[in-house]
Image 1 (cartoon, rainbow, N blue to C red):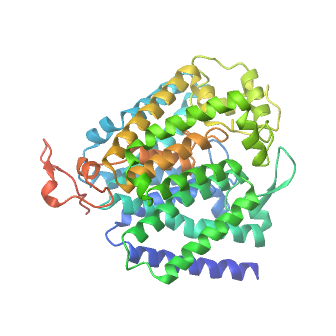
Image 2 (image 1 turned 120 degrees about the horizontal axis):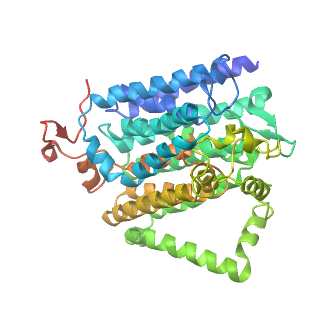
Image 3 (image 1 turned 45 degrees about the vertical axis):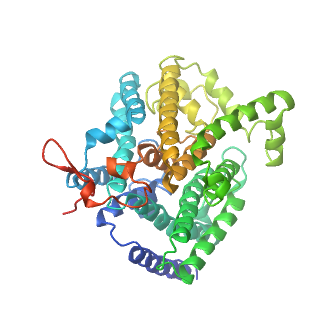
Amino acid sequence: MQQLILFGFLLFAAWLIRRDIAMRPGLSLGLWIPTLWVGIIASRPVSAWIGFGGSADTLDGSPADRMFYLTMIVAAFITLSRRAFSMQWVLARSWPVVLFYAFLLLSVLWANSLESSFKRWFKETGNIMIALVILTEANPMQAIRAVFVRCALVLIPLSLIFIRYFPDLGRRYSQHSGQMEATGVTFQKNSLGTMLLVCGIVFIWDWMERSRTNDKNWTAIDRGVALAIMGISVWLFFLCDSKTSMVALGVAAILLAAIRMPAFHRRISAFGIFGVAAVAALITMDSLVGVTQTIVTALGRDMTFTGRTEVWRELFAVGTDPLFGTGFMSFWDDRFYQAKLPNWIAFSAHNGYIEIYLAGGMIGVGFLGLMLLGVGVIINRDLKRGGSYALVRFAVFVAVLIANIFESNFACMTPLGFLFLVVAIGYATPQAEFTEDASHQPEESALQPLPDGQVIGRPHYP
């Protein structure tokens, strides 16, 4: 019976994806590269899906996992080499991201295993190549939505099927509490929450865009499927109890909904200022009346944040280099430091900022802060020009800042980290950046010649 349900769902999922492809004309076959990439980093490694070559969620991964990532990166490079865009322009515009990843590469030099650390950096940097495949599509905003919506159509219902009918795949005992937890297609309940978070943000954006443009291809059947996916997502959030992802999605949803309200729409350029003011107000209120404890208690948590403060205390106690750290992704396989940690701490700091501190020390945190500040300034500048995409980027940016307080998503091969890179880069052509509404493509007359005779603008596909 279980196998029949699974087989029936896979057939239905294939029909849904074919329908989604038909509703989004103009997207290339190259978009399957980021779709497969997101599908894997949002769920579990390839080796776990195919059942051989290793099945654990390890730092290095198995040979099958390494082959998958290398194949995808090479395929992305070949695809980009056939598209007319200026990589120099993209890198110059994305200087905060470039500086951060350049420092992570430099930190490889003092890692305990230079080779392993470099491999992990190369795989993580592959996210940028994959993101550019999306952003160089003829309709990049539609491409972003297509990638995450198609992953959601498969991974969200499949998570429910795993939890309900395949408990060996969809549930596990927590190493920290010993309680049974729902994991769905992922290996950990917070990973399931992160998958629901990124899919939820893009799903809401997709719904709003289709409603705003009165998309005639979007029928009652499609609305019903979307509502069903959202309903399953709510139920999965309840099962996995990932409060961090719930809060981040709630805040992002409020920001996305604001675009439909005339009062907020007229003041969209001030959203960045409002965000900074809100954070300052929260910090002030917390120092005066302890608002943080009130919020945490209301969410059903204590001030240890489900044991996270204990994890942070243990991590700071091991005595890593406070200035340079241990090197990129080197802390978790360094036997010297691991011997000082209790066995219930497993391969995550549960805080993106502390994770970077472990890898790069205070210098690394400084580069992270510079990246966040630079990306925030760029997004705030784009908010002043208006457009729904600018608001989506701002919503993702805020969600990332919140989620990394209690989970590690910076340079950690997570779907939220990947979505952050997409919105941090933002555009792959100047025309897309300065189009009045970034969801519409520039006219051919807007194309400009490059010095070498190439063209910046609408990508050309073989």
